[in-house]
Image (cartoon, rainbow, N blue to C red; front, top):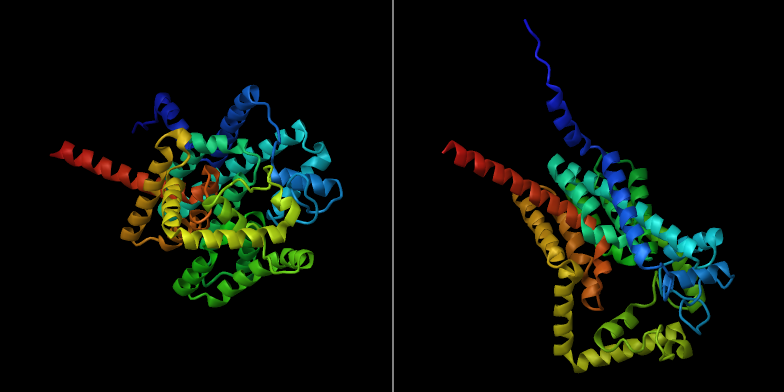
Length: 402
């Protein structure tokens, strides 16, 4: 009996598609594309640190001033930013010079790596919770989508925040009754790392811990996770208490940001007002707290309108890419709805989308503020697209059969 073997042409066609399933191919594509984009941007826009607050704090650390104020003509300790990213930049400054072009290139390269690693996490999230097709759609969309590809150009913690947020969610969603307490503790450490990088990442953690504990009957494990997260933050909170003589868990700038977003940006410390420099960080925050509360009480309608505009802006930026961001938002929420209808785990993903933006709704928002939860959005959008593809395939088959 003759044994049939695949023709070489068939093998050549199948091989590229098989490679798309490989994490290494996804990662290398993401890195290569981002490096090309960074190269083009560097060719036309020489990189500079400018008024970069994390870099200013990193400079103070290298020069022996401690974790000190990032604003011009201001001295003394600060809690304006969380500590991890300024310390990362300080390490680069020690190796490559303080706020040099070489250190900026290194920071950009790290952002490229962080963003590319996130593609692997998105792939895993999609595969483990919504299926192979959803993971592939989501991972490759993250790897090649223009708004994500250009994000490493920003010399902030944004790319690292997206990686940590998605990785924390991936590891936490794997926890169940059979998980050892050490695994719960490890997730608590990841969340505390995220808090010291960008405390907004913790917005959904309490609700998420309750959902996991309730569904999987893991109250002890959830308690251990929350406890380890709190213990990881505690040393920084103690440092703030010793420096400012008041309780500041991570950052001190909530009320100033409320003021800038609802009253005026003219008093921002990077400007010429010098109010921050004259009053000091704590008094400045208390002053702006009183001012913004008085303003909102006097103008509640204006506050509601501004908040509504910020809600709309959060889900529709970045405007430079047209309707892309709005389409991603719609696809992500469609993924939530489809997961609910299919009986899949939708609540934890919905908590992230619903709770993370709250702080930006009442302060102000830029396109990069949404980026830390965009891995979750791409995962859900990948699921929605995969379901749409299945529906389309079935519709075509039914039409052909009819």
